[in-house]
Amino acid sequence: MSLLVVGSIAFDTIETQMGKADSILGGSAIYFSYSASFFKHVNLVGVVGEDFAMEELEFLKARKVGLLGLKVEKGKTFRWHGRYHKDMCGRDTIAVELNTFGSFQPKIPKEYKKSKYVFLANASPQLQQSVLDQIARPKFVVCDTMDYWINNEKKAFLKLIKNIDGLIVNNEEVLQLTGMYHLIGAAREILKWGPKLLIVKKGEHGALLITKKDFFAIPGYPVEVVRDPTGAGDSFAGGMMGYLAQAPDLSFKTIKKALLHGNVIASFTIEDFGLERLKRTASREVKSRYKNLTRMMTV
Amino acid sequence: MSLLVVGSIAFDTIETQMGKADSILGGSAIYFSYSASFFKHVNLVGVVGEDFAMEELEFLKARKVGLLGLKVEKGKTFRWHGRYHKDMCGRDTIAVELNTFGSFQPKIPKEYKKSKYVFLANASPQLQQSVLDQIARPKFVVCDTMDYWINNEKKAFLKLIKNIDGLIVNNEEVLQLTGMYHLIGAAREILKWGPKLLIVKKGEHGALLITKKDFFAIPGYPVEVVRDPTGAGDSFAGGMMGYLAQAPDLSFKTIKKALLHGNVIASFTIEDFGLERLKRTASREVKSRYKNLTRMMTV
Image (tube, each protein chain N blue to C red):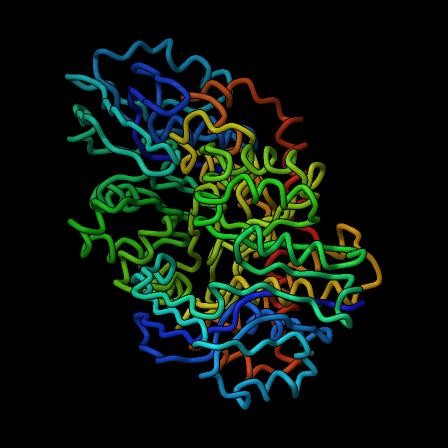
């Protein structure tokens, strides 16, 4: 069924222990849609500035990513400059220019208003809510966020998550949201606030899927070299939602498989800067890593 | 087959977010042997001071822990005072008095010299080596360590691990040992130095089992409340080695099951201070959590 992502399109400058990349294409909507396209056609809603050359998105068109919702506005495209710590986990933001993304008011094209699977990438809860309000009757809505919104827009955020199915957060955000110190207790608390399922991203330690009744844990895929972790979370979400949108049901078993596929897609993303490794990834490689991953979890 | 642990016996003073415990029984050999005793009779070699009341160990005798190798020496028993950070992961050592453990020269009783399964708990590599030299023909030797020995006795440590089967380390120690930044690459490097298998403890994130050919990941058991993480690593090792010592073989599948059992035992340890929760744990609870844990990993 139809899959929609609303998120950022950006030019990223990235520094890691393994090198530097200057002003390369990035942003949540880009990572998400390319990742989802391994499994399912996806429609994208986002904004760029006048400095954006549309040829940049040819590789997405080739994967049948729908770009009806791409808006070009006066001004520049969102830019981010980050530097990762040695552990490839922590990072410092060196510079950020929100530009057109800062005033973005997404308008969902008529053709996408009946989307059944919706991913609200990291953005202000108000923006995320306004997207949700434009979708007729979504079947499965998953939302991402970041510490900034939890700190500064908590009320709007708590209102938003009453009406979603899945919330994707990282380890620290779970604790931050609840003011609790222990992940599992905190996760159970958040589930009382609305979401049916909580997906906790733990970087190299994998991810957890927690519902009121169930618990599922997946390890990080053991890649030999990490060159750039940027986009890992959105790739994970993209692989997961892409898999779900083509699956026959939303059973817990199906959602578990979806998480594993997301995990596999993210394992490619981090092997090179930006989308480089992902663009070189063949479907048979995805299948092969999926098989490896499930084997690594089998007693 | 016969199982031996050589390690510390201590009085611990522990402060966590959940409370404080004063001078309670602890030490690697204590946590290990009680944990192993869920599966297998274990013999203990360790030292205490004249301040130690032997009644303290009645609960181990009741579990058939062999105490022939327990030495009482002039002076005091090892004491440690630690304070855990809010995240229940990091901790500061407030005070440490090595006392009799500082000059401990373990002499393995004749009856234990033919032990087949041996756990060398955290101690100086010289002490660990001297134990190993006293065992006739061990079948499976696993060794623990800590950052202090890696920093200060690296040469002796590297010599020791040439002759062991399994090395248990935590995340940070893997990186520290290799000077590398990425866990998986660093783990593969350490496997070139001698150990056939590397067990990476990751606290709440579970553990990894890595060999030259294989990889297995287990999640942390999702306990609702952590009161005191002290002894988790030794409980994990104890459950693992106890399970192995009663298992029919040392296949990768058996070792995987052993890790899962270790993980389950550690999940009880952290639910209360010292050995309190562990002492209240029935075998059927262990079986029940084992079943839960494998279910949580099943796609």
